[in-house]
Length: 120
Image 1 (cartoon, helix red, strand yellow):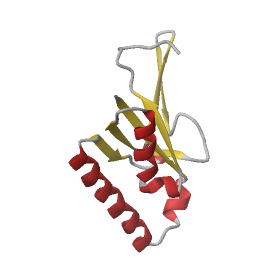
Image 2 (cartoon, rainbow, N blue to C red):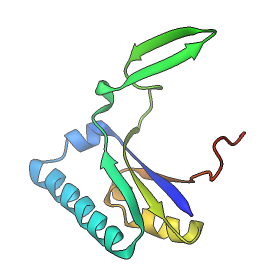
Image 3 (tube, rainbow, N blue to C red):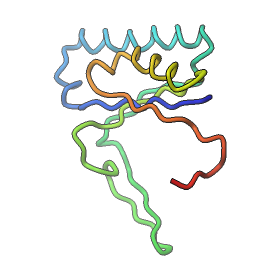
Image 4 (cartoon, rainbow, N blue to C red):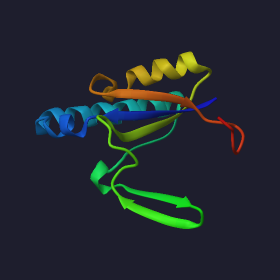
């Protein structure tokens, strides 16, 4: 089953890291990418640009609204993702626990729907 692991961090906390600390964290992510690719668990992963580079788009009653910035102001911002293949939620959680950013922020694990649209 496919799962997405959404990485949330406080961007201010990341900016406060020294260059060495940040580069070390980035190298850990790249090493995990290699391990998960080798094990067949990795489908895709990537980092996102800072939240100030976000643009939010809404369509309401035929009117398009475009706003600079994120969808919502929050303490932690979405900073990246891992799209993985796992046997079940337990394996997905184990993989998410290995994501280096779990130490500095949080990882939301969510199954990918096999159907086009799922009503909540």
